Image 1 (cartoon, one colour):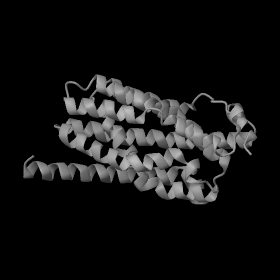
Image 2: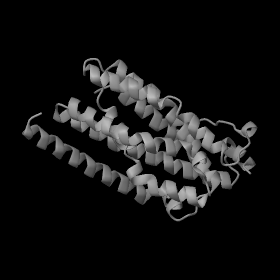
Image 3: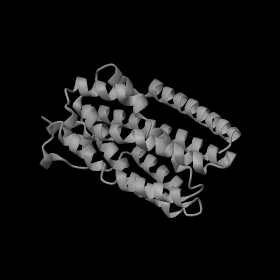
Image 4: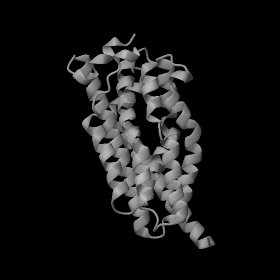
Length: 245
């Protein structure tokens, strides 16, 4: 890569990072879930609903990532390998979310997996859409923020751990991801550098990044709304959480 190309790529990443920072700031400003965590008011039921919805969308991440790989041959062998290897590494991570939910004190026999909330379904559907249609590179936009999210959310994870008095063994989903996502984030940046050749490629990555993060924020908001319904005894799907010890 020439010096001019290096400068251009660095500038594009700087712009992408600024856009991502602004998107996170917007999410923090409007999310009742995140504010509740920041203020030390989270309880086990709210965290459990978030974990269940995390289970739902994570269940599909390996599948939609692999779907990109099916379409990536025209991009190049390295990108195809990245898609399938990343999908393999993500397989089964949803079970860590269920493990952590049970570790909150819910008897295993009481666990009932409700359907995903509508905004969780919207996030899942969008990730399948960008994986199955359009530019095969654009799912990198989702990976770009998801694999680097700990830069923004680690203080919240630590606050949840402290306020709910959780051990690392009770937070396997976040502990495991925090260890592997740093390497994944570097891989994503490398794939973007190697494969985004046109202005449209970069725009597609940016749009998928901001849209998927906004949809994640919408999911978080619905998690909080469902928690409020649960407290009013108007959430049949999550009524089983009343059995937590």
